[in-house]
Amino acid sequence: MQHRAAWSHEGGTWAVPGGAVDVGESPLQAALREAAEEAAVPAASVQPRHAWTIDHGTWAYTTVVADAVGPISPQRLDGESEELRWVRVRDIPALPLHSGFAAGWPRVQPLLAQHEVVVVDAANVVGSRPDGWWNDRAGAATRLLERVAGLAEQGLPAPTALLADISGRSAAWPDWVVVLEGQARSAVAPVGVTAVRADSSGDDAIVSRVTQAGRDGRIVTVVTADRELRQRVQAAGGRSVGPRVLLDALDALADKP
Image 1 (spheres, rainbow, N blue to C red):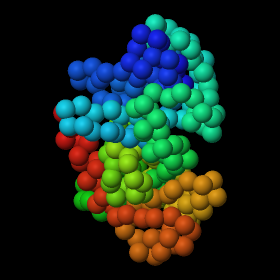
Image 2: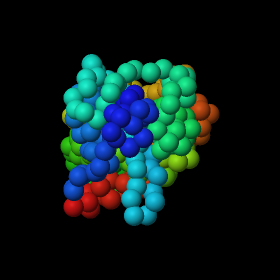
Image 3: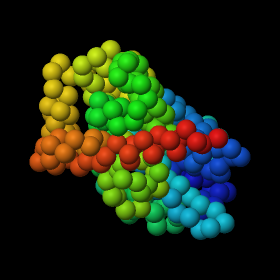
C-alpha cells in the first residue's frame, strides 16, 4: 500500500501506486510501469490475474490484481509516497483510504481469491480446423501452443465464455494448460503455457488436472468438443466450452494491429 504524499490528491490517505496511461500503453502496461517507477516493483516479479475498470466515459480507472511470483522489495523512488508498506488484506479497511480506492476496494477484494485455469484439449482443438495437421501433428500442436502463449501474455477481455462469470472484471489472465497426446507430445511449449504430455489417455490427463485444480480452489475451464469428456469435466467440478470459443479469441488476437 502507498501512503500518499501530502501534496497529492487526498494526501495522507492510503491507496496503491498508479498513474496516467501513456500514449500507446494498455492499462496493464501502465500499471506495471507505475509500480516500477513509484515502488520498485519488477514487472518480472508479478503475474497479472484480473483487471477491474471504472469507466466514466471521458476517462477510466483500471485496478490490476496480480500475484507475486518473484522477489519484491518495495522502495519509495519518488515524492509521491510518504511510505510504502505491505498490509494484510483484512487490515486495509482500517486505514484512512483514498476515496476512489475505498469505493472500488469492495469490488476488487473478491478477485484476490479467484484463480482460473484454462485447460486445452489440443487434439480436439487442432482437429476442429483443417490446416494440414494430419501430416504434422507435432507442428500443428506447436502452432497452437504459440498462439495460446499470445493470449497468456495479452490476457482475455471479460466477460468471455473462456472465463467464469465473475462480476466486475474487465480482463483476466488465467493459467493456460495444453494437454498433448500421441505424436503431438513432442510439440514445443513456449513461455506462458504449461504443456502436459499424456502418457496414455489425454482425456484422463485432462480430468486429472480438473480434479487437482478443484482441490486447490481454482476455477477450471476445459476447451473441448468431446461430449463424453465434457460430461466427465462437469462431474469433476469444471466447466467446458467448445473449440470455436478459443479459436475466435485467437483469431481476434491475430487481427489486432
